[in-house]
Image (cartoon, rainbow, N blue to C red; front, top):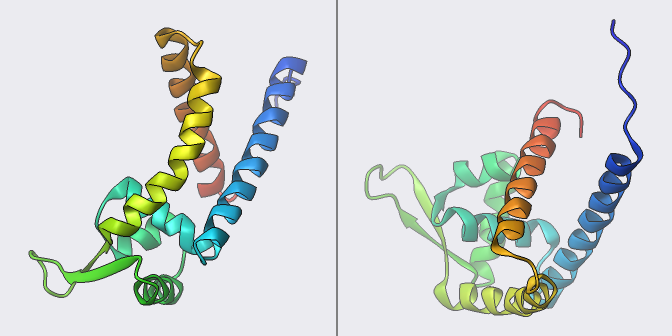
Length: 154
């Protein structure tokens, strides 16, 4: 078996900064969820709905990794709290589509708007080329992290 190449200091330092950023992001997610009277898993599923648009429970289950029972309970909670609504799928009446309530989506977007303004301030001096690089970098890292999770390494 070939010997693994040691990770250089800069890559190690970058990985450490990513871990700290991830922790900070999780803590912010918990705080925002709490402000909305939600738990972090419920808030995360709202994020999935904002990203994916109206979705079936199965699509949310696949995205979140939750079980059938857990996703049903989560949708029930979000529906009772007025965050989502269920509607029949026009193409397959056996399926239910879960959608964000527009007013709730606007409130969530506004809360993240304050974060976006702060990030905009931080990144305002970056060139378009630098921002495109960072976007590509984050997408590549996300794919690596998703792959590690999917392979049971997370």
